[in-house]
Structures are given as C-alpha cells and as structure tokens.
Amino acid sequence: MLQKKIYEQIKGGVIISCQALPDEPMYSEKGGVMPLFAKAAAQAGAVGIRANSVRDIKEIKEVVDLPIIGIIKKDYVDADAFITPTIAEVDALVATGIEMIALDGTSSSRPNGQSLDEFVAQIRKAYPDQLLMADCSTLEEMVKAEQLGFDYIGTTLVGYTKQSRDLAIASNDFELIRKARQVITKPIIAEGNINTPEKVRRVLELGVDSVVVGSAITRPLVIAKPFIEAANID
Image (cartoon, rainbow, N blue to C red; front, side, top):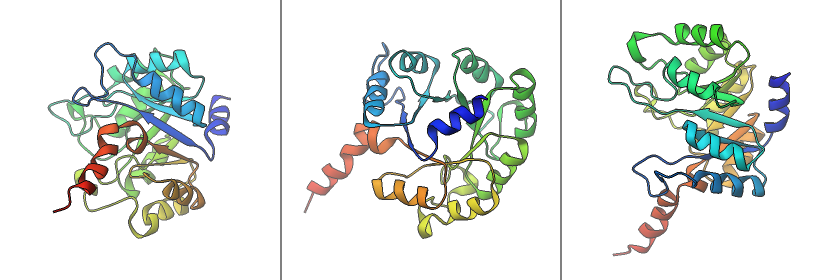
C-alpha cells in the first residue's frame, strides 16, 4: 500500500523543501537549480523533498529517488489560498507521478468560492488513491482536515494566514504541535520556522511523524541576512 510505504520512508526523518520563486536569486528560468539542492539533501540523509512546480518536480525526480511532496503556488484574484488551490493544479501534479500533493487546508477563501470540503471531494472523486497533505494554520483547521480525510496534516501555514497571524509554531515550546498531537490521529508533518537542529529534535520528541525544513537550508538570501545584520554594529 502506497500510504504505508511512504509513511515508513519519511517516519522520523527530515524532508527538505527545495523551492525558489521568480523574485528570488536561486530561481532560474532555465531550471536546473533545485535538483542540485535536492541532490545535496539526499546525500545529507533527507527522507523526502518538498517541491513547487511541475518543472522542478520533474527535474528533481530525475536525480533523486526520494518521495516528493508536490505543490503548485498560484495566486487567484478572488482567493487567499495559493498552495495548489484548484483542480487544475492537482491535475498537473498528478501527471508527474508525484507521491504526495500538498494543498491549502485552511479556512482561507478559495477560487470561485469553492469550499475546502468541496475541493477535497472533487480531488478524491478524480484521484481516489492520491496521497494528500493539508497545509494548515490553526488547530481547528488541522482537526477539520483530518475529518475531511487528508492523509497527512501539516503546520505549514501557521502564522501566514489572517486567522493565524497571532500564532507562532515555536511559541511556548511548540504548544500548537503538542495540542495537535493530543487530538490528531493522522500523521503530522511539522513545517514552518523549524530552522535549527534543536527545533527538529524537539518537534520529533513531541511526537510529529516528520519534519520539513526549507528556508534555513535552501534559501541563501534568507540564510545570509542574519549574518549581514550581525555585522552592522553602530
């Protein structure tokens, strides 16, 4: 069973998010950059990759043999949700043979006024065996996502939505994760502000099934800034 196989592969490990948007230095119109990050992640012992766009996913699949969590980030004028927000993005991701698809699992507005319930039902009707991960921002959204039948529940959007702006995944010793583990039975993937080895170890100790680390490893601009700021001493 695919679900069991993937779970066994990523259980207790680190998934590296290899992404770059058009306004970032590591983005290349010609491609070829994200596969290098993915190869480095694989050599370091990563158990999976999270990637954005059909192009990057295809290129990464050519160089590493790891499960990939695929997304397509796309903005729609009538919606706040932008991570794999419609069936068009899901169709494109499924066509790559992706192991898992992550999508906005929040209460944020969706394109064409579609509810999350309707969207999940639409995906399940078209692709009943596709593994799905819910990118959530609050505990209530995580509980709802489990009720809707998502295979994996993520903390990806904590602090990034209107309804979670006052939340921080790392506050009070990862209180949100501790509460989620008490009520969520599906696998939980911790993601968002997991930017040190100590935080990785801590969230695993708290019972999450896997951890996604991205910016702290694969976004040189973000990595460099604290060092530059530290040198600016008046």
